[in-house]
Length: 190
Ligand code: ADP
Ligand code: 5GP
Image 1: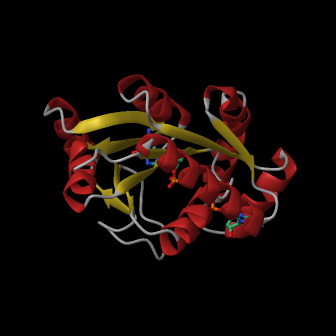
Image 2: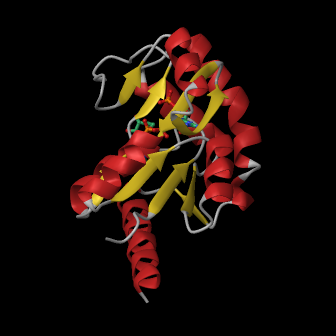
């Protein structure tokens, strides 16, 4: 059984990661979404165990001390982490794993798994990002402000990624990301 390909998708909040991931997971066979743990509150419509495992900070800290995480980081004042169990699930199901993680988590994965495919989704501009974050209407104004404040620093780290995709038109972005995964899968096999 071959090891799963790790497909890391990062980008500032509102760059379109969840939207693009939902499309590629629906349209490409053999992909599994890595369900992270987080200490942030669920947004309306989010489901525990499907979008995230929502846990209290004490539980998250216990998991860190148990060595349960492949990587974890503090992002926008909350804790987020990928459990080793998600990689194991991909191995058992014989699928490639899609990780929606921040730039700090991506750096940790790159170090531990040099074969990981790293994709940075960029918004066309910070102004467009701001509009999309406000338009999503899922966060309070304070939460949106923190995310916009952090976006510039995150965008500056785009060059650490193997692929940078500007998410202007959604269909074009989805096609590009699918093509990247297909190419990386073919290279891994050869
Ligand atoms: P992220 O997961 O990176 O935080 P989302 O996928 O939630 O971002 O996208 C933020 C908002 O922008 C959502 O309302 C989504 O529908 C919208 N969006 C995503 N991609 C595009 C696009 N290419 N053009 C216009 N709106 C988009
Ligand atoms: P959101 O709260 O919008 O779902 O996610 C906020 C940020 O946390 C995004 O940049 C997202 O990629 C990141 N994130 C989600 N899960 C993880 C994780 O398991 N590890 C790390 N390092 N970042 C994560």
